[in-house]
Image 1: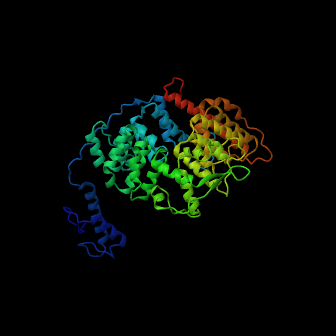
Image 2 (image 1 turned 30 degrees about the vertical axis):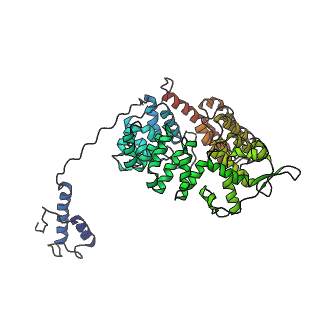
Image 3 (image 1 turned 135 degrees about the vertical axis):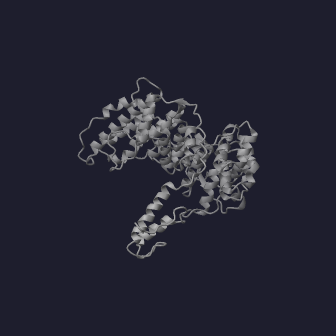
Length: 544
């Protein structure tokens, strides 16, 4: 074949792209170097493409071999029992469905993965090496399991993440970015990482020191505070929530003068959580001047006189001057003052009354909602259980909103200040009175597994809703919570709910079958959870 060709010893830059462009446009419209248009041009194009293909496949010059990766670090934790390892593989292999949304009676393995990871981490197990890629994929795809998955995956996963760009998120997410933390007893190593480390490494270092020695963490932060970026100062300052105490007050008072508004607001919030701080005392004076007891009527009444201006001193102490759209300025300022004032000052200010008696007082001029909402925020911020109980009121109260909370979301936050047992007992009483339709947020703050009165209250309420012919899909969220949170030991008590009752005439079409399917899934899931725990415990009775 007599066709022109290009020299093969040194390809022209972009030669392949040139050939592709010529093929797309045609040899009649675009000529090849050294080959005029004509019948031979297409053949020459193919010859050149063949030569360039060989060059691309085999024409690479030898390069220096890359440095061999360092061996993966050892993981000193215990190996998973064999049955638990098989269970992990099944959980990681599950993928979200693409159907109509009806789940059937089979357990949702994806929802069981977070519980399995938490239980494995509690027992100090290490994953099988072959499970690390699937664990990293699960952590990438699900932010809800990411912390537990990366903790369980351990140091070998961080080593693996450096070799695959898809897993680099783990280096940013894991404490220290996957780097080994220096020995906290070695000041030189700590100082070097604090001065030279990446932001994620510095955050992790500060958190580790703060958890162990709060004053040392504060001093480390103070040493470089003036040179940090505003967004970094905000993140570092937030770490002081751990172990917050009176010793932090001077540093936080200094931060009140920061040039960043967000930093000032965070410093003021932290100071207001210290009832003995100077800021808390200043807020107590301001808030106390706004609320008083009026004895001129038939019964004592609280009166409110909101501030008429937001001066510079108030702004320095964290009061935001500009109200959000739809809020009056005076009520906005007033709420911030009451929220930041120590709750312990109100009994003395309001006639020696207890928190429960104060909350029960009527409030004049439609200020009750604003005042009680601010007290709710203060009780949550200051972790004051006595005020939380007063604002929550009785779970059997006719109004589900309670005497002080303006929403169920506020009630959920107040519940979080109580211990786990009292919280569960209160929510059980609420469900017994009001049912499940308004209890979803409250159940979300209860410790798991639900046991005793709370578990029975949820199951009883679900059974009542089924027997009443209620629309079943509206309870799917609570049913999903029950699958994850009920004590697995209660599975046997639920067997009586598996029978399919007669469908009431006014029931939604298909509701009875849906309820039966949901209860079947609940029982099956509880038994599977019990098996998972037995497998992690290495029980001979566990079945994979």
